[in-house]
Length: 181
Image (cartoon, rainbow, N blue to C red; front, side, top):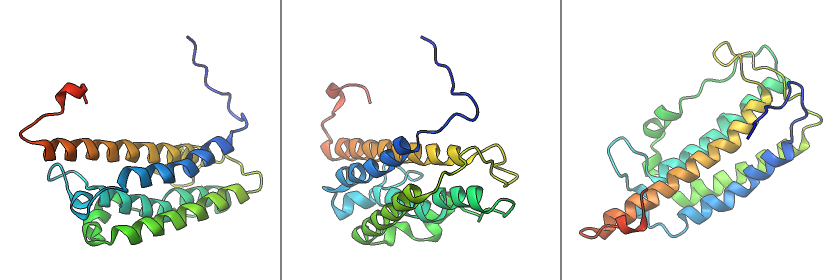
């Protein structure tokens, strides 16, 4: 099977990626809706994130990363991108102490704003390259596709947290018969 890459300058199917972003919201809700306050804050290990930390991360990324980077790349060429520190924010912004319902509602509000903003872009030049020297090879379209991919990575992380918590709660029993995780 051949997997040919689209040619440079090919028109991007932005609706596909915007729809993916739109569809991710109810999937995140479904992954966390039955979690107790304890489960939302539970970590499977000292360096692992809790479901609440994942949700807080999604909110901060929505506000400060993808939408901002696309905007700067499309509309502010030459301007330096604002610095971000997703790993540092977990402790610095006290993710574990936040109210899960408030974070979820804030993320959903920002996601709706992002979808409206993306749909309102007038013939964006997705091939424009970012002016940040550390990200100079990334184009606006790369940020959009990464944004949709980012949601999938964290949906996978939430599924892994559900699995790990279920296995933790099942002790001394094991869910191994279900198959390899």
